[in-house]
Structure formats: structure tokens, C-alpha cells
Length: 425
Ligand SMILES: [Zn+2]
Image (cartoon, rainbow, N blue to C red; front, side):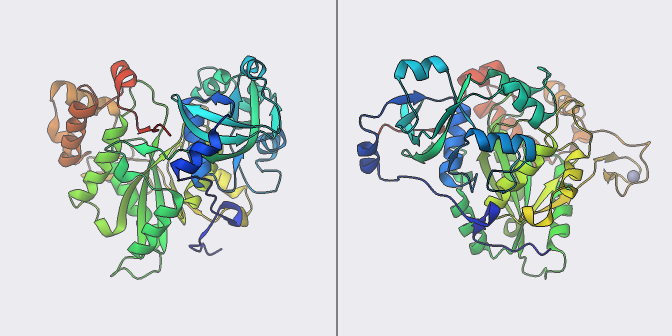
């Protein structure tokens, strides 16, 4: 099947945009509405629904859709969908506020108006059933299970409309594009094919190598003198754990690869998406493909254990799931990639699909990078796995944003500058 760049989103639907951009109009609309406060995760998902990242969804799911997604990986209209998008509220709050089906309420985040919600259905759904169907486990050590477990006891389904435009703080503002805006960018750049690279990492040379390999796979037979294929680095910004790279370092270090010329600016672009990883392995791979097809990407990189955690999924389960869905269910193609390391015999980045020196391989680990940061030791061997400009930018970010560390600490999680803010209407 040929993947075509189209103006339509997932499920061959128009890109959803449900946003009131005039504050005056928004102010009138929200007046006198009853209010529900939402979590950071739900706020991020409201923004995604409003701007069409989740096309064809126009709101939070009703029970029938949640069930269809869990049991059949489809929406009730038949469109492929792998992770339920739900709004959780406590039953006490619903009772206290006297909130009812059919009502229009205002969703509040950080004490500011965020979105109007047309309540279609108030329902219960067993959260551990959700976890079992989506993640394949109910083990509390799985971070996705924790997300479901911590959700409030009642769900509300219904369409939403954003009434407040999120303002992104630096350095994120220059990397924030809505699906409609990013598609305009692709047209401007003359790109006909775009391969998405999902990341939550500061790039090592292995990541760089894989992005370049994926560019060749995606470009295929197209001419190369004036490139028509681009790499979209799409950094996932959401809930963080201690030890993760700080968000600022992730986006700025990917940009540094381009600024230092390791990847040409006419084939490379860095952007962000707000999303809380469920670590759902194969189901999350499908979800990432849906998300990036809504951004206008034609291809998506999937490496070893994509969106996995621990040993819950086989290392290539997230590759295989694409063989199990019908070809026309997605308008984006997977680019499947194996493992990589540093090979001392080849004296370069070794790719397990090419390099025959598997016994000699030197795994590149976060521990190694941590060692260099801590003791300044072994900078030379670090250069084999991370570009010096990227390393320096990472340390600059550590000082500027990370309270001295490029990895999330308790202090960073408590005191970091928020990624976006909402203004008073
Ligand atoms: Zn080798």
C-alpha cells in the first residue's frame, strides 16, 4: 500500500479542531457553568483533543467506546484505537456539585478555565479490567497500572471545546506545533514523506544512527538532491519519574544535533507532544502511530521494546502487532529497527542487523553517562557514543533547568518551571 501525505487525519477524518481562540467569546461561554477540576494528565489530553492530536476523537470516551477499545482495539465506529482516553472524576465531586448527564460544565486546570465539556455519559468501569486489557497486567510495579489504579472512581464521557489557549514556556514554545500547524510546516519544507522519531531521551550516537537509517528507509526511491523526506523528532512531554532525562535537555539536545550539523536542517525538525506514557508496549506503539499520522507523518520508527517497561513485553512485540492489523487501518507505515551498541572491532556504532561481532559489543548505558557526569571520567570513550556538543548542551541544561542534574530529581519535579500555563480569561 502506498502511504500518501493527505490533509486528513486518522480514520480518514478531517483533523479535529475544537478551540475558541477569542478570550472574550470564551469568557461569555464559561459564565455561570459548574466547574470540575482536572489533573495534569487530563489537562494534557484536553489540549490534545482540542487541537486534533487524537483525531477522530472530539472528546472523552463514553463507556461503549472504552469497552470496544479494550476488547477489540477499535472505536464503536470501527476506527482502529488502542488506548482509552478517559476523564476520571470522583463520585463525591459529582454528587457534591450535582453534576448530571446532558449538562455543560467547565473543566478547570490550575484554577484556570481550560475546556467546556458536554456531559454525555457518567459511568463506572473497572480500572483493573482496563489495565489488564491495555497493558496485559495488573502488577502495580508496572507504571501504567499505577496510572489506572490512581484514577478516580467515575468516568465522564462527552465532547470538549478548549476555551483557553495554552501558553508554552521557553524552551518549549519554539517546539510546539498543533497538527494543523505542523502540516503547514511540512508543506513549506517541501516534504512528501516524514518519519517520526518518538523520544524521551537525550540523543546518543545510536539514536542518531537509527534516525539516519530510518530516513533512508523512508526516502526509498525518491530523489535525494533536494530532499523530500524529513525526520520529525517528536519529544514526549508528560509525567516524569526520578532518573528520567529532564524535558528541557531532551528537546534542546535533539535541536543541538541539527545546530551542530550532524543532521542537516532541511531534513530534520524537533517538536513536542503532551502525553503521559502508559508503557503499554505493542498497544502503545499503535497509539504512537495514530498520534503521528495525525501530525501528518507517513512513517514511524519502532526500535527494540518500543514503549515497553521491565520484562512485560517481548523485545519485538511492538513490531509484530503491525502484522496483525489490516493494512488500511492506519495511514502510516512502521519502520522497524533492531538493537545497537558500540562495537570496538568495527570501531563505530554497531547495529545488530549488520555487525557480526555480537560477543564484542559494548552496551551503551545511562550508567556510563552518569559516571562521566559524576567523575568526569572517560570523556574520550563517551565521545564514541555521544556528540561532544550534545553532551555540553545537556550539562548546560542541567545547570539552567535541572538544579545541576540532567536527570529528574525530587527538586526538579517539585520546583521546575511548568511546560505551559493558562492565563486568566
Ligand atoms: Zn562490529
